[in-house]
Image (tube, rainbow, N blue to C red):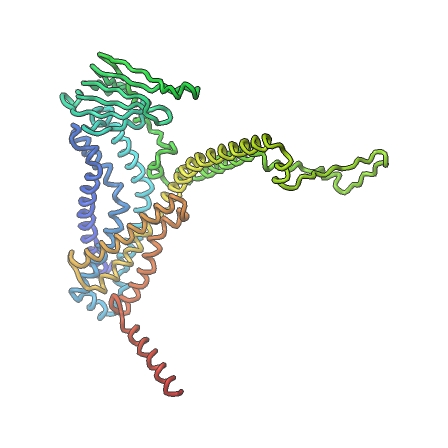
Length: 500
C-alpha cells in the first residue's frame, strides 16, 4: 500500500471510530430514555442494567453505522479539500476515484462485516434483550408493577392488570391499595379485586409468584349462555381477609418466540430462519384463505360446484326409442323478482328475513376474519421486510460512502460544523424514508422488498451525481446551465419574431 493510501485510510479510520463512539453514546442515552420505565426506580442492580445496555448496543448498529460512514467520509474529504490537500493530489495527477481507492476497499469489507453482524449478532442481541426485560418479573417481581398506573402482566397464564398506590419494603414486595382487573380468554375484564394491602412472594427456583392480598373485596360478572339470563346481569361479590393469587410466569422465560402475535420476532431471526419461516407463513396464510373462502361459499350455497362430465361419453349420441323419450322440463323462473312474486306475503317475509340474517351473519364473519388475516399478512410482510433489510443495511454503508466522500470534496469544509449538519440532514432523509417505507410495507400498501430497498435506491443516484460533480470540480448546485438555457430560449424567440 502506498504512503498516500495509508494516509487517507488513517485519517478516515480516525474520523470513523471517533464518530462511531460519539454517535453510539448519543443513541444509548436515547434508548435508555425510551426504556426508562423498565429500568428506573425498580431496584435493579448495576449488573442487570449493564447487561441491558450491553445487549442494547448491537441493536443500534442499523442506525449508527450508516450515519457514521456518511459523517466520517464528509469529514475526511471535507478536511482534505479545506486544507488544499485534495487540490495538491489533483495537481499531481491523482483523481478523486484514485484517492478513494483504499477507502473503497475498506467500505466493501465493512459492508460484508455489516451483513454478518446484522445476520448473526443483532438477532441474538434482540433475543437476549427481550428475554432480559421479560424475565425481570421473575427476579424482581415488583419491577413489573409501576405505582399509580395499571401494569399489564403480559405473557402470564393469569392475564391481569395491577395498580398499586405505593410499594415499599425489601425489593418493594409490600403493596398498598391494590386494584386488580383479571382478563378472560376473550381479553375482557370481568373480575375486579380490591385490597388494602398486598405482598409479592417469589423465588428464583420457582416459576410461580404468589400475590397475597389482605382485607379486600372480590367482584365478578357471571357470563351466562342463555340470552334471558344475560339480561339479568348476574354477578358474584364477596369479602375476604386473605386471598392468594398464584401467577405463573413460566411463559415469560420461554425461549420459543415464534408466536404470530409477537410482531418483534422477525428481528430475532437470521436469514436462513427468515427464509424458512416466510415459506411456511405463506403456505399457512394461503391455506387459511382457501379454507375460509370454501366455508363462506358452502354457507351461502350460491355457487354450487359443477359436476364433472364423463369424458368417455361426450361424443356419443344415445338413440332411444320413441316410447322411452322423456320431455325435458325447463325452469320457468328466470329472475329473483319473479320467484318472490309467486310467493304468499307471509312467505315473502320469511324469505327476506332468512336472506337478511344469512347476509348479516356472513358479513360479520368476513369482518372478523379480515382483521385476523390482516394481522397474519402484516406478520408475514414484516418477515420479508426484515430479510431484505439485512442486505440493504450492508449496501447502504457502501452507497452512503459514495454520497459523503464527493460531498465533502464539494463543500470543502472540515470539522464538526457544516459537515455534521449536512450529514444529519441526509441521514434523517434516509432514515425517515426507511421508516415510512417500512410501515407501508408492513401494511401491504407496497411490496416489503421495495420498503426495504427504497431509501438505499434513492441515495444511489444521489451518490452517482455527487461523484460526477466532484470529479468535474463542479459546485454542489450549479445554476449556470439553467441560466444559459433560459438565455438561449429567449434568443430563439427574438430570432423568430425578427423573421416574422
